[in-house]
Image 1 (cartoon, rainbow, N blue to C red):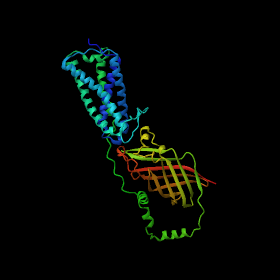
Image 2: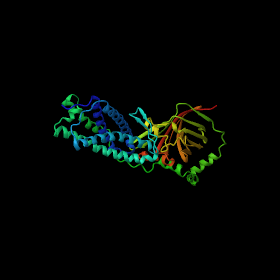
Image 3: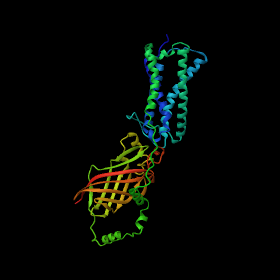
Image 4: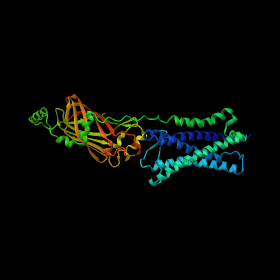
Length: 414
């Protein structure tokens, strides 16, 4: 009867084998998923670091507990030893090169192992990135080859040579475990394929324009042209003349924004929607709802306060690919004047400064309530590429427009 490995060694052997099968199943699909595979990358990194930890434990046990003697010498035995050494190099090298790859990437994507433990980036120069990326891919393919050689060698001994080699890795020579433990490898592969996202149907082309979109685009891109265009409509001319004859009004009253307001944003992402909000912002508002043309609006947003409720993505938002909040900690919207578009409905054309870029921007809002307290709800559509937001490889699935919504209560200052 062949000598068996220790129970700890057996447990680690089959656990690592199942996790490697999972990694192979997931790794094959990652490159084609783009931003849609964001969470899958986190799983891949988490499982990779788990394999690294288990492999270190396996090496320690290998030298702590006695190992069974070799069953074969000569070149066959030397080949088997070389495959074992290669597998250990693979189980150590694949997660380490993956860690280096993530640490040196241009876009610093945070890693939270299984959503719990933050993994720090290695202090490596950016020049190492290409080497780590190529090495990770090469090691993965070599590892698959070694994995198959190891399985083939075990089957050769156990089935063809009949020396019962596989019993070394089966507790109690249990026939049930002889089937169940290798089945863990298949289960790991199936689990890896099962968590892959379903293929995405091609997105329907966005409408070329709607009435509101045309109006907003005209305001944002060619506001000066629209302002200078001749007005031939007689009714409009009469209205303008009537406004000109009105008595001048005094300065608009100032308003104080009350706690509990919200500025939110959402953007499409490969058929899904990413939604978030800014937790820190201030607003300075002076406006007479009866005379909106005299309004003065300034909103300042702390860009580092952005959150989409996901630790991985929240860690990416302050980076240069998105908000670049280290160099540009705030975004501001300012507008001088607003215009009524309906009962209690208004439009303000102003300037949005984001990530060091200033562009025309239109917001729409409604007022409810009366006298000294008003509730404000509104929205805007921001073209993110105009401000350099989402300018990297992980942003390829994002839609060009970001929807911004806001709601708050304001009280008039006495």
